[in-house]
Amino acid sequence: MAAARLRTGDPPPAVRPLDPPLPDDFGDPIAVIANAHARQRALGGRLKQAAGVGEIGRADADPLIACLGYELPQHHDDLDCDLFPLLRRRILPEDALVPVLARLAEDHRRTERQAQAIVDLLAADPASDPIRLTDPARDLFLAQAALTKRLVSLESGIVLAIARVRLTRADLKALACSFRARRGMEAS
Ligand SMILES: [Fe+2]
Image (tube, rainbow, N blue to C red; front, side):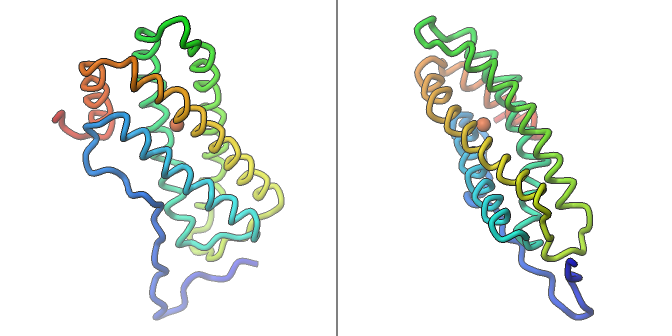
């Protein structure tokens, strides 16, 4: 049974944010994507650790809710709505990237479904600390960690490597505008 988080007078637990922090400036779109991937690696580590011990503390869980429920869909929109369409216009046949992008877009939807299930689980009882994980929940955490690792590896190792070569300076500026607009920021 999950312990109540707070008794009267207990200080709230310190939140452990994911490292690295979000960028201050979204003007470099390749760096924005690399930052998201670094945060997703940290997230995957936290999911695996929680699955291993069968519970997760609220201080670890709250940053995961924000990352899975908010940052991840935003990151996927950066890729599916902006980067991938632009790349499809710039890549050469020898890049062999078209099927890779199609598969990644499908995997984004799958990982978002899993992410939402994890958010629902972590947010179900905000007073729970730690949150105890059932065996199916542990399996879900491990599945998400594995999928995240595969996606980050493919996108960082192949897609971003090609984007660095094929995208023009004007492309990068257009991406930065889109990324900033998506986050409610003014164009730089
Ligand atoms: Fe990604």
